[in-house]
Image (cartoon, rainbow, N blue to C red; front, side, top):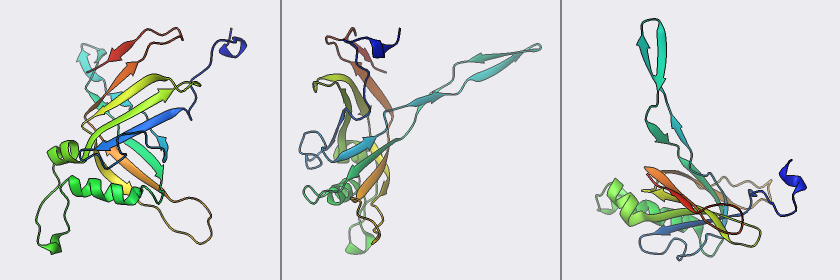
Length: 186
């Protein structure tokens, strides 16, 4: 029997999520949910099997797990200014404009310790309760698209960022929904 015939079962909905992206200085989202976050890709991974030939048979063994980059899209409100926050994250990662006399470079330690201190994606239910939490480990911005202006459009300005990371942890949170609390930690 399908879930649509059950009165006490509700599927997870794509629009019920929260994004928390904090910078090390606390300026990114002021420590709360990013209300201007429009969409985010949940962490995904691939594993390429390794083949071994023995006589005239081929056997496959599990390979290394590779976590795929996350794409985060947000609307650019005037307050807080999302473009300013993205540029601050880039600067905190170590990037400096070279003709101002400062010579510095982007590094992993600056990107993961001084720029983005945490990225958490939380799935919520119809009552606003957290039911699934993804914590991205060592996130760093690898691409930012600050939008294209167009006189033919009334759309809101959107900013997209691609975020690379080392791994992600998933917490299934207990509640009145038939799930047992469980953490999937590397």
